Image (cartoon, rainbow, N blue to C red):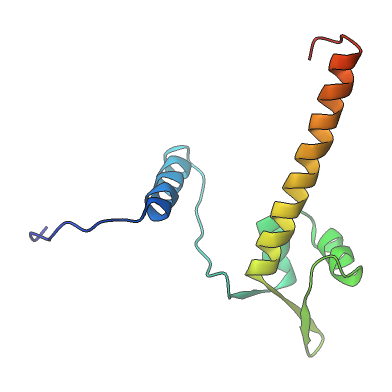
Length: 109
């Protein structure tokens, strides 16, 4: 490899690279998609790890914004990421509530 000058990585980029390397070391695949990319329903469902019919329900219910190209739906990656973050926060809040209730009842959780 030719000599190259060292470059400084922003902390966020270094953390991202560490996440990528850890995932690869664990044998998990890594896909990098720009936030402004538009996904098909199959791609968005895969990114969220949900079934395509469940994703279609989220789209039809207006929970995740989308647009139509002819008969096909397109979902912005940033909207998929925002939904996942919201869903993760809601799930975490529910778990925290359950743990609190279990502790109130001395269930040793």
